[in-house]
Amino acid sequence: MTRAAGNKMLRETRPGSFITGLTLVELMVAITIGLIILAAVARLFVTSRSTYTIEEGLARVQESGRFAMEFLSQDIRMAGYAGCNANLSGSQVNNMVDPPEDKTRFNPDGITGYKYVCTSSCTGALTEWDPDLTTEYFPTGSGEIQPIAGSDVIIIERADTLSTHLTGNSAPSNANVQIINTTAVAGNISAGDVLMVSDCKNADIFKASGVSSGSGKITIAHAAGNTDNKFAHDYGNDAELMKLVTRVYFIGRRGNSASNPPALYRKELSGSLFVAQELVEGIEIMKLGYGEDTDTTKDGVPNIYRTSPSSVANWRQVLTVRVGLLVRTSTTVDQENDTRTYDLAGITAAAGPYNDKYRRRAFNSTIQVRNHFQ
Image (tube, rainbow, N blue to C red; front, side):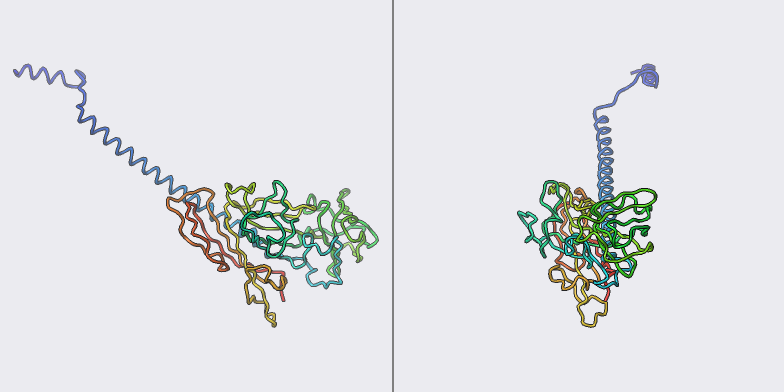
């Protein structure tokens, strides 16, 4: 090739003259490098996504555990609260609720524990509980949320201050009582509620048979559902009205379906029925231990923790409750199976291993029952 021909070829291959292509080798190298970069980015994304899912799950577990423990702590601490009536003797407190011994309506001990000892083919029968529990708490009708087999159940009863006082019809001869209508009262009292009126010297416990409001006051009738429609004591306008609250805490599943995640439920007495409410999702196990002061000296310090509710000699002697919660993520987040075991307040055998891909954490707390004292 002559120099002139070579110069001509160089000029033709300069930019703007002719566009030259890539060889097959160059193309394969470029594709390979691109695939390597793409795989690295995809791997980084998957790893980041997995880490984010685990961290989000752990944050939700932490949040759920704290919320559940807070709900339980508030009510356990206040179990048996009756305001200034705690020191009244039996003759000073008149329980008009019919029947007075019905513990689903009023229990001065304030706290009772149960275990759902049934493990298979459970029907909610009386004998499936330790100790026996009437079906009024967990009726077997359609749509009723039932405890998970083997669950611990705790029933809390206490007074709820309504920040209101009597304003009329407080004499024993009246079949109704009138109170000042306040924000705390409005919409918080209905027929069937169990109420307590007290002046710190005497108290009457009754079931409201009717509630009506007008002219800045609320009139509460107490004829039906009581052993008598008259109070046993005479009260002045300084007497206070409180609402008696009954709450049942247990572990259940939405629709009683094993495919739904477990959750902490609370049933609250509303009128004559218990209404179930899902509080916190992901609470898998709740274990309870009851610290009882059985010493003859009654030093106010628990000397034994009962894990079987039927072995509690006197619920009024239960001064603390140990609560152990096992909380899990709502979905599987781990790559490996969960082979760990979990200690629940040191009151039961370690839970696990579960050999699934849920992430779990145990929450333990000892809660003082403030209104139980020696």
